[in-house]
Amino acid sequence: MEKVIRRFKTREEADAADREVWRRMTPGERIRILLEMLYPEESKDASSQRLERVARVVRIQRR
Image (cartoon, rainbow, N blue to C red):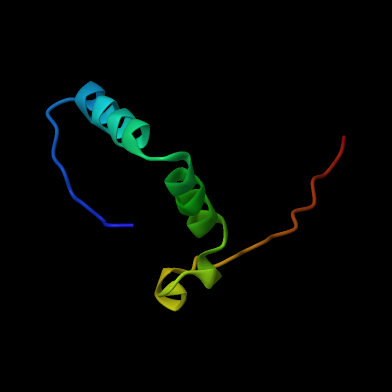
């Protein structure tokens, strides 16, 4: 996926532009992007894009 930076004057303009980009994509392109987000380790440069997974157990006192 090609990364592009665009500037907009309002949030509404940005949202409309995002919807238009997604509308122009084929269903296969949308699925490919979804899979890249779900499984970044299988993408080409995954080592630099990986998110750290953190879990914490918190005990809550009951009254």
